[in-house]
Image (cartoon, rainbow, N blue to C red; front, top):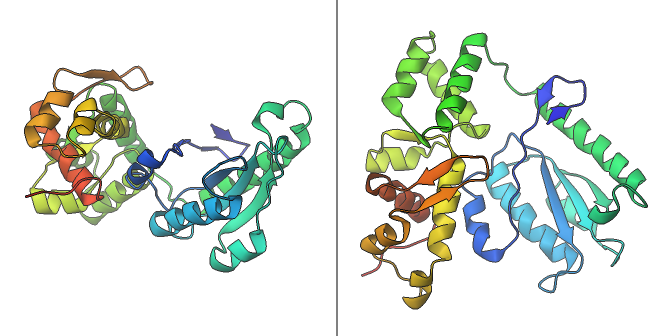
Length: 275
């Protein structure tokens, strides 16, 4: 999405609010972002302040001091009362609170949406001011990674190193480049897994991870076995499955990649060893 006349392009990540999906968000929360926290005033689970506090803690844990815009949705049905003064005492990265109605963005709430859009663009431009600039060679690598992600969700570390070396990106610059790619969501990099498990591939398509995790969490076999899966069960659930990721890519889960999925889930406490 082009950010005004700034020359920046923003990429949107939509994180589901269902409780079962919450633990997977930490795979992708980063500091170089602008967070839009949408509060549902009609939620039966929590009041708006509790909802906001819950998600603001997520941002604090994984996004550091990244700016947050609070949005109260469905305000045409129920007033959205958020104590922004109290919330800002513990979360000074809150940049504003906007009451909107998604169904009325072209009508009654058009003006409010315009105000929100201006505030959102302003925050994106501020974040963009401190973003690093990539060289033409680095952009060439990024384009290569994007092209490769349409064919294969993984890229070998050796291939990445060779691609960078061929364009004169090596040493500390390569490590910094990899960190930035992870922060931008171009490459998902879990250093702990690589160090502890010796895994030698980077994840190019994050939807491979989320779709795989969701397939396991929502599986009938997991329900029947009261939340316990064996290694063979994971293979049974995902073997021969082809899942389309909404971007036109078909995701497959060969046996050799399942350990990475399990390790990632274990690292982020989505599963635990038993016995």
